[in-house]
Length: 173
Image (tube, one colour):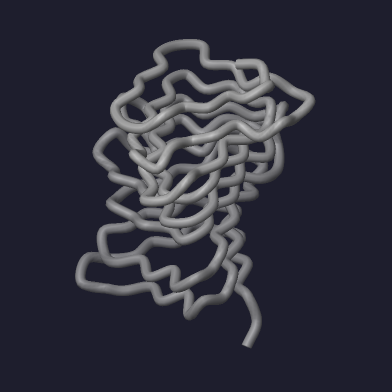
């Protein structure tokens, strides 16, 4: 059994379930979820060379936005959560009027950005990389920390502290 690379769109119809069975999934097209997406403990990679879209309510285990300067666009009606790790290597994650909810660590690389990010885990979370955030919400009573790193994280818009401590240590923000 091997991981799946899908060069087109994954369309999960109403009443249907896509079960990743803990295997990694690489999408080069869109993810349209009217049904249920069961990631198990996989990593879902978005690596298209043009803008990609997510629709529907989806909970990822690990989510990775890879190649190109393109955008991963989350539909305004979608509720998207990451229960473990978020990695944004390149391009932008466009969240519209919502925030991408992450319960684990988040890494936004120097050549990457995300419009809205809420860190809402149940244990200490790390926010790393040198990328840009439009809006950052800290909603974790176990705290969020920026580890020592060479590049500053940039918040271009709003920084909201709902719960916990946001510890930037010796890092630049």
